[in-house]
Image (tube, rainbow, N blue to C red; front, side):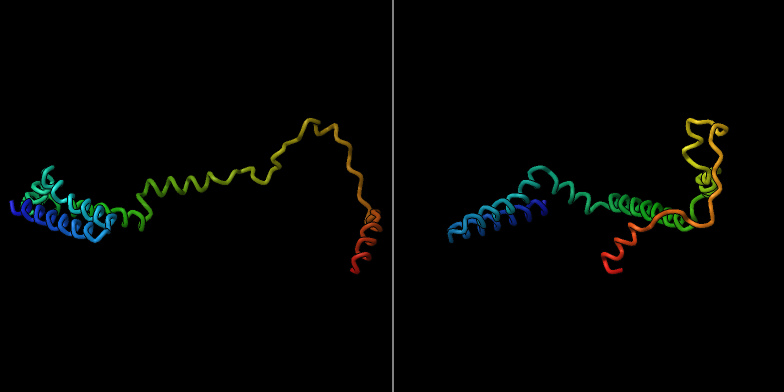
Length: 148
């Protein structure tokens, strides 16, 4: 009952201030103040204030909030310990196995395979000579052009 009275008084005071603002030709401010001052009376009429007042002064409700808070703290503590220890033994074994399986045993083998020609049909490679037979005259010309 007292909460409803307080909300009604706050709404009446807010509407009075909004009327003074409107009298001073500050219509936007007056409209905003009127909207804010109608909120408490709306909460009273919907029953939210009565429910909140009954909850705030109820020992049973506060015990319920305490139990919810304790459950939340236990949950957070368990998560912190789980992160620090790296999970359960099964989870650690599964992670270790996944790391071992992540590397493919034939990772160094070529990924394209043999191609379309069989290996026997390939011509034998010619032995390379010790001295390079390539002509680097075009590269030398470019380097000289740039002054290198």
